[in-house]
Length: 196
Image 1 (cartoon, rainbow, N blue to C red):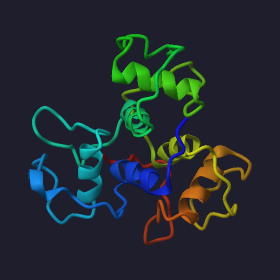
Image 2 (spheres, rainbow, N blue to C red; image 1 turned 90 degrees about the vertical axis):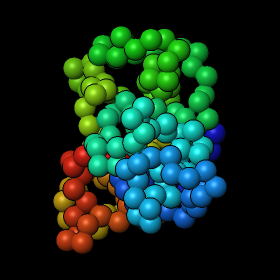
Image 3 (tube, rainbow, N blue to C red; image 1 turned 180 degrees about the vertical axis):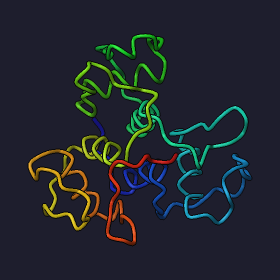
Image 4 (spheres, helix red, strand yellow; image 1 turned 120 degrees about the horizontal axis):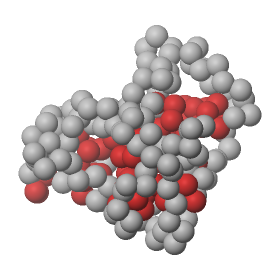
């Protein structure tokens, strides 16, 4: 798997968690989405992802900036960001068998399973249409980045997770690398949904 840089990881997280990052909008082509406000803190992230093929938006011409990101969409974004790695061993969860083999959704889910990016739920499902939580988005990013080491601390008061688990490590890594800053009240709000 390609080694992913912090800038790319921050960019994909921005798409799902609305964090700012330093990419520039390509103003030559005009606005691709009617719902992306010019000058907004997420504008650069959205257009970078669009220009690089990570996201396509919706047929109505919108990006869906205020819509929660679905779990399948998070994996599709990560799979595209990783360069659409070829999937040799097609795998699925019990609730993702209906996705056509070879589609971006099926390939992203197969890649996510075989790469250890996602493990699904105890019921054997992936729950592809459920909204991805902030903690689950960070876990997927952390695993995509190869589970990098971190200093091992979290300053958020609402993240009481075992320090040896991926949830703690992912949040710690993201906080220490400026991928997420949390909220003004010192919380991370791990169970809130990520917005596209």
